[in-house]
Image (tube, rainbow, N blue to C red; front, side, top):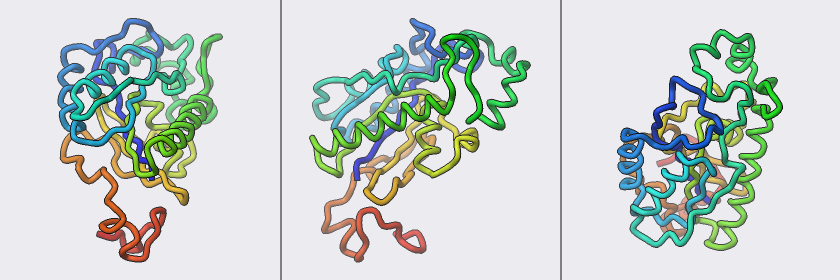
Length: 237
């Protein structure tokens, strides 16, 4: 039951008004640094097996804050380009209020599975989701092999990438992923089992995280006859 903690990077000066995409040099601002410091404090006691990040600076800084604030040793922050932002092509660096006037904007909102962003560097949303979900599968296998099936690890990524991963975990068509929200410095948690993923938290920005650590066999699954991938009828306790 490998548990994935998806963390969106903290605020930057471009977050919100401008589509930053892969623009180089976009770093956390004072608000963002304060956000990720609070998040790092919340995650500090969790037994993280690894911290993985998008190569973009705002995510790397978020990952560094989590690793630096952790109670146990995080030997190395791993970088995986597959968790990088969607490649928005010619939309990169443009104000959202301007992009909202583009005909493609309505397609992004209502039929994102059909979207490929314009320009030679533009990527499809379906392609971005596929690379991110493939990365999750690879990391789940690696983490479970190296640290056991109940290990937790964190991935610092971007809003649309996190939404795509959650949509996959929920079994939602990509056209429904705009119903999911991932705010800056939010925590989204997916626990993967042989049977199915369990979406444990979405867009969490506060509160206790101790319950994210899987319980030992004598306390958790098994005592009630359920397997680790079974969903209790009625919701359970």
